[in-house]
Structures are given as C-alpha cells and as structure tokens.
Length: 77
Image 1 (cartoon, one colour):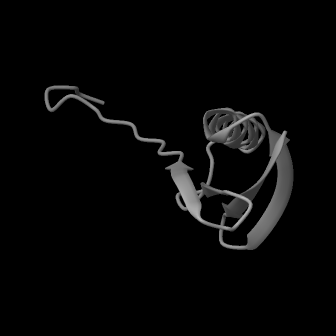
Image 2: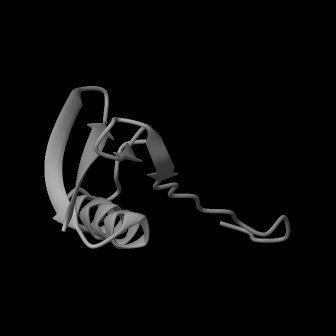
C-alpha cells in the first residue's frame, strides 16, 4: 500500500493520511469521504473540496461537491 493524503477544505483546513493501492484508489477514497460528508451535512457548504496528494505531497487530483437547484422559467409558484 502507498501513502496518500486527503487535504480537506470546508472553510477550515485538515489533512488525513490514508493508505491506498494506487492513485486511482486514493481518488476513490477521497470521493467516498466527500460523499459521506455531503450526506451528513446536507446541503453541504459551497466551498467543500478534497485534494488528493501523493506521498511527496504532489497533487493527484481535486474534487468538490456542488449543490445546485434550477427552476424552469415557466414555473409559477
């Protein structure tokens, strides 16, 4: 297993060390963490993101959750 870091930002900064088989698995772990956070804090804040870093703290990828509602122009309320 390789070491990766999840850098979590939601207005505050935190970093979690994880073990994953490869960068793809680390990104999946980050996505699962982001999904879990979004479900527990629904609707999630606008600025939630997780950046996955490798063992040398190089960016592997970044993900964020966007919650958006769009109404049709013809909808009468």
